[in-house]
Length: 277
Ligand SMILES: NC(=O)c1ccc[n+]([C@@H]2O[C@H](COP(=O)([O-])OP(=O)(O)OC[C@H]3O[C@@H](n4cnc5c(N)ncnc54)[C@H](OP(=O)(O)O)[C@@H]3O)[C@@H](O)[C@H]2O)c1
Image 1 (cartoon, rainbow, N blue to C red):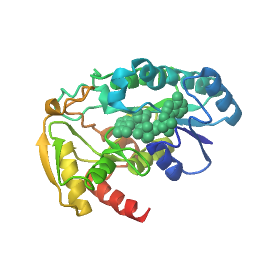
Image 2 (cartoon, rainbow, N blue to C red):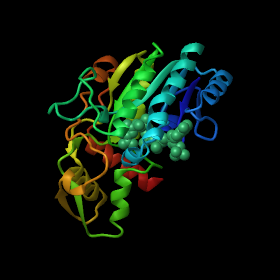
Image 3 (cartoon, protein in one colour):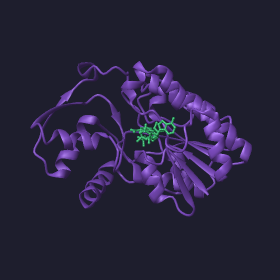
């Protein structure tokens, strides 16, 4: 059985739909990953063969003022999962982030490129990676710029703002790849199917700025909106973000044969599914 931890989150919900076979989901009501006792109780009772951890404190700016909580949930708690999965002989899959990189490389980041997180969120997720490796049977999947049904995300924010405004300023100096959670769930499924272990990058193909992404969202949704470019400095958010954090997904393609679709194609499909839902 595959156990999805954080099953009510944005990625968790799509993993529950996409992963094949016997899949169970738990979230904060059934398991508190920061509690070793809670993790032990759930894993010893359910006896999963694979645990996919999507539970996290994902408010990147909130992490800056809640350092202890960020380190506990995104970092130390993964050690609880690693210890018990190791003990019961289960594989631990840990979802991580491009924010472990500082964005200074200027070309797509490889799995073994040096890490240097700029934010508390990035530091806490890096600690989570280190903790996941305490179970030798681990798979770490770094991804970025996620959006999906039932989650707080950039696409939903843009569509909400479109109901209130006719003009918006959006950051144009951060570059990454918007990634649909269904496509990431497919990548995780393929990695599991192919028996992959270690660290992988998984994101939709191509790259853009948040400004380009906003323009694409409004164009594909048929919404007239004037989008103005803005710098990261002008926006002045509490957490520092990498300016260029495109993930090189060549290892995923090589080891599974799966190349995730281009980000704009994924966005089109998401918008169509969202209308149906
Ligand atoms: N969102 C992105 O753009 C992005 C980018 C790169 C990587 N990631 C990573 O991808 C993964 C999934 O992200 P997501 O956006 O789908 O997350 P999400 O929607 O915020 O879901 C996280 C889930 O974890 C639960 N949770 C929080 N603390 C917990 C605890 N102590 N024990 C058990 N469950 C707990 C949350 O419950 P509550 O809602 O009740 O707190 C929520 O249901 C995370 O590892 C994240 O770091 C996300």
